[in-house]
Length: 107
Image 1: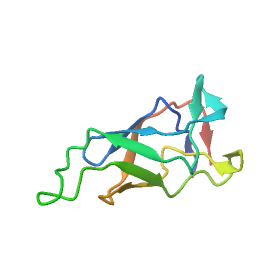
Image 2 (image 1 turned 30 degrees about the horizontal axis):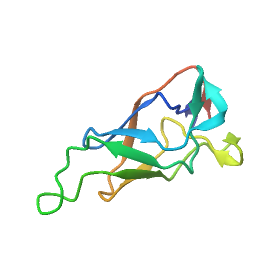
Image 3 (image 1 turned 60 degrees about the horizontal axis):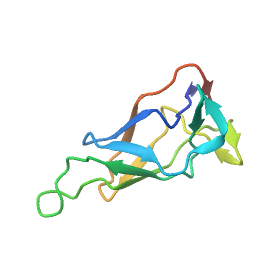
Image 4 (image 1 turned 120 degrees about the vertical axis):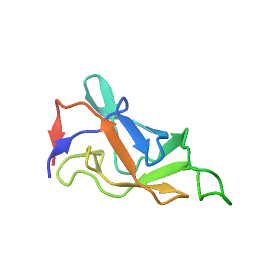
C-alpha cells in the first residue's frame, strides 16, 4: 500500500510516548531537504514512560523495523514508509510514525 516516506525529521513515538530517532540516516535520498531512513536502520527511544522491571517490562530502548517499501530502495535497502511496522526492545510494542512529510509517497 502506498504511503509517505519516513525522513529524519518525522515524529516517531513508542507506545508509551517515547520519542524515537534513527541512528543512521540515509544520505543518498532526501525529501524536503532531510535524509530518508532505510529498513536496516535501528532507532533509539528516549523518554519512554513504561516503568522498569518489577512494575513493567520497560522502558523501550531501541526499535527494529520489520516492514518497509516493496518497490522503492536506496543502496539496496527498502525505504521506510509511514505505515511501516517496528518492534521496540525490550517491550515488544510498536513504534508509530505520527508526523511525516506528505509530498513524497512510495509503495
